[in-house]
Length: 262
Image (cartoon, rainbow, N blue to C red; front, side):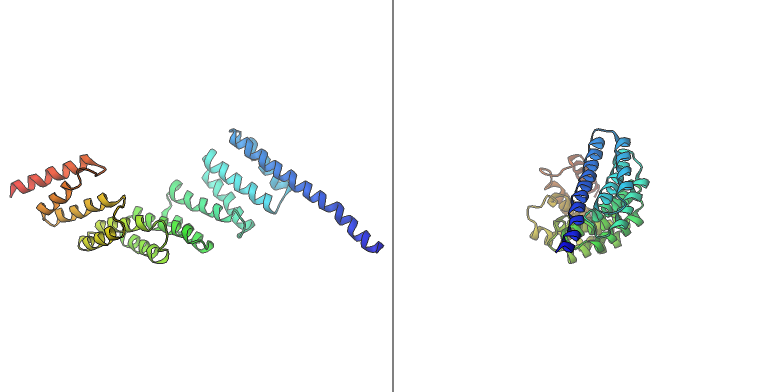
């Protein structure tokens, strides 16, 4: 019994010490956050770096690295250094609570800050492999498809949009994706496919916010095919609710001129 007590007593002393030390670390994180919120970026950085020295591993380390990445990206416009810190978060604990957010930042920085679209696609694909949440993965898949649109690789964009619709049929992106598919088909001069695609969309989303945009594309296809009267009728029907009345007016005037020339 005495031997058991001798073994337990040191542990009882260690537990409060560890708890106290962890609490001090959390206080430092909070202090760093407060410094950052109040615009004292460099003070926040020094506190976070002191945490890394004192706690070389564990949750506090991950929090400090993650916050350093945010400060360098959002407040110091040094996204290269930010990526380095976010990558360290990943290396410290790939399955940690901050790893997905860190990887998301890396992908978004590659896409929106550096406009390195090829690398951004790779980073979003990594996110899909890391995450098992369908909605979040559909977010990443939508970004991949959108990047191919930016790259004007419309064939691949259509393929990526189709992956989203097939793999994540319950995603909140489905309506937007179907509209983007129609836009992309138009960019590919695949007007023959658009009327059927448009009708299926309207059946699924009769009150869609994209309704007038889709009808505009449909009318444009009719115009390009030389069906001027039908195109004019299609554009005319949009006069009450199209978001860009000046563009609509220009379309109607141009078609009127073409019809009168005939």
